[in-house]
Amino acid sequence: MQFDAKLLLLIGLGLVAVYHVVSLVRGLPKLGSVKPTVGLILHGTVTDFFDTLGIGSFATSTTIYRATKWVKDALIPGTLNAGHTMSTLAQAFIYTQVVEVDSVTLVGMIVAAVVGSWVGAGLVAKWPTQRIQLGMGLCLAAAAVLTVAQAAGKIPGGGEAIGLTGVKLGVALFGNFVLGILMTIGIGLYGPCLLLVSMLGMNPAAGFPIMMGSCAFLMPFASDRFIRLGKVDPRAVVGNIIGGLPAVLVAALIVKSLPLTALRWLVAVVVAYTAITLILSARRKSDEIEPATA
Image 1 (cartoon, rainbow, N blue to C red):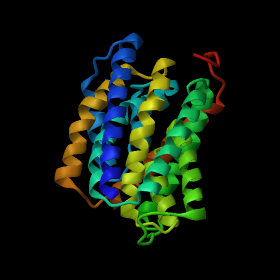
Image 2: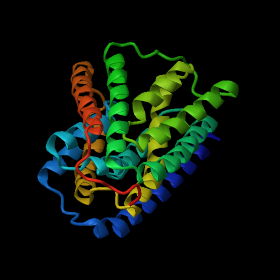
Image 3: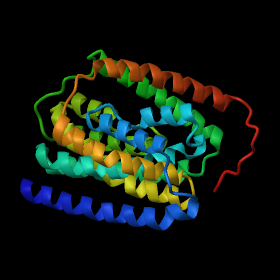
Image 4: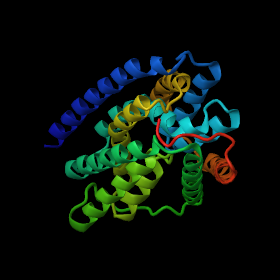
């Protein structure tokens, strides 16, 4: 049964990977140049390398995009989802096959996250810049708090379970649905999902295929909605793919783990600063009046 579930999961990942590639090829050239700069490629390498090791990529990418002004604020949520999808698919291909987790829990939480992301992408892609700035700012503030908790060792250690049933499963499904929505605003699912399953008594190791599988299945569909509405930066997306895919393979298959506590403290400080600047930007009167829909 477990083997069959893993095989079906592999087939599913392959299908959504094809769907995502078709979406990129069909949609990105219509939005402008797809030729990335060296900086955008290096960004993909660094963020997806540490993402694979557990740091997360959305908060760090948002910080880099805002500091360098490589991506406009209004395009950041869509660019995060579309740009990191291929790397996340690679992570899911690896981790869902080597870590044991209950099939019902895994599939159920993945489906819940996909539904949440579909709902969220349809809303966020139509938001004006100021609302996106405020949403990202608040989400990054939450991400900074979570990163501090991780660095300080305050995240619950979890239990030994590799699956959930009853009320706990219901809580997990609803929680991942909400996290799927938040993914489209710009807060990564990895850290919160790991916290969720640990608090419900699961082995944190079992959280890796859940969080990576959830993102791998939800991001292609969310990305497609953002691309169709023209809410991504095509150069940044391509740069992230070129730099990110090799970084995932190196991190997952060669490096495997690093002492990341000091880096988490640094990320927390930088992300908190970015959150503050986004919130302040959202509060200022915009010089540009934007329509509510693309």
